[in-house]
Structure formats: structure tokens, C-alpha cells
Length: 308
Image 1: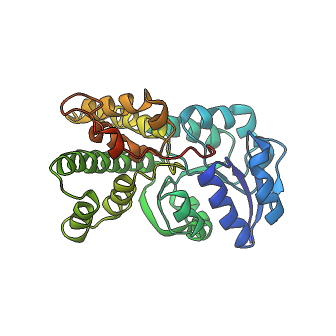
Image 2: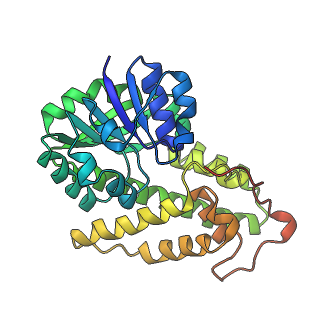
């Protein structure tokens, strides 16, 4: 069993760290809000005193929210203490991945990018899909740990940034699915067609993938609380898609429309604290013009619960 430093204990990170603890690894955890570590400490993890303390483990893993969080926690002072291999499993920009790779290599440590596909419940079951890129020897060394966390590991290349490119583009596709479901339900519901039956039609015929089945059920039931992936993180991924496409001189014709939807959702107090699937409500409630809003008795907003 390995000694693993784990940085970032949000809903996703906590589920992943718990998988490693339960698998018998010696897990040294760190989080900016120490209270999040309590359940893991009860399960057998050890609290790291600082990011540098976690990075001194022979293998370290981070699951931090975005570029700013990753580069604040994994700063030069902390990274100088890094040993062995660091695996960054967060959805960050390729440019940030380049900067972090340079920092870790300057410290004599390897850097592997391994962003994941899946929600916290999937992480808890060890069924994530993991997109990995890095030097082949480093990837081989971390495979046993990644296989505890994921159902499949997808090797995408030697440059860490390409894994982040792939993750951004996958999330861009998910956002399209959410928007397509929202627009479709807005249309059929106004024509008196049962939304639940329509989603069953979609997922039982031509659109049987996970994005349609998971988000179709969430959207038709308006089950957006507690959020598996916050609206603001979805908007972050739209901006990353714009950045990644721009690097390759690719024009994304639907991008501006999708950004407008997420901006409208973030301007709504209820939708802003919801799962990103709630972006579908912008179309269903007529919040960007076009058809008028649904009658109040046909809208069932999610009940507030504790935020992550």
C-alpha cells in the first residue's frame, strides 16, 4: 500500500480520498477548511499540516476547484517540498497545467494530469472515467491508485495538458446535452406532452447515453439540490472551452448562446446555487425571452439544503 497526500476535500475529493483510505492506503489529507477532513480522519486518514506536508508523500493527488484554487494551493513554496509524482485530477485549463508541470519538474517531481468524468456518487463507487496524460513511466507508477478510483483509465498522451483539453471538451458536450434537454422539454411541455414520458422516449431510443439518462431524469424532476456540480463550475468550463478552442483557432458557433444561458442562470439566486443541470430551467421558464414563463403552479423549485 502507498502513502498518498490528498489535497482538496470538496464533495468529489472527499469521495475519492475515502476510496483510497478504504483500499488500505496511508492517506495524508489537507483542505483549506479543516472541518471537511473530520470524516476521513475518523476513517483512518491522517491530517497534513500544510499543502507542502501533503506533497512530501511519495505520491500526491489534488482535486481543487479551478485554476485559481490549484495555483494558490500548489504554489512554488509548497511544490518545492514535492516528492515522487503529483497527480492533478481537477478540471483546470491546459495553460494552468503547463505552469504546474513546470513547477513540479523544477522541484524534481513528476506531474500527471488525470481529470475525471463522473459525479461524487460515481466517485464513491470507484467508477469514474479518468483521463490521464503524462510521462509513460509516471503514468504506469500511478495506475494502481487510479484503478482504485476509476472503472477505466483513458491514456491520452505524454503532455499533461492534453488530458485537460479532453476534459474541457467532454464537459462542453455535457452542457450541450443539458441545453438540448431543456429546450426540448420547454417545447413538449407547452404542447401538453408529459415531460417524464418524453425523456423516457429519448433515453430508450436514440439518446441512451449517461448524459441524457442522468440529466434527463434530473431536469424532468427538477432535482437540482444538492448540486453534484455547481452552476459556476459549469460556466467556468464554458470559458475554458472558449480558451481551448481559441488556442486551436476553432470557432464554436453555439458558445455565445450557451454562455448567455449560464449567465442568466447565475443571475438567479435559486439557480445559481443549484446543480448545473438547472441551466435547463432558463429555457423551461422562458428566462431569455421567447415563450412566456411557465405558470407558477407548474414550477417546482428545489427545496434549499446545505450547500457544499
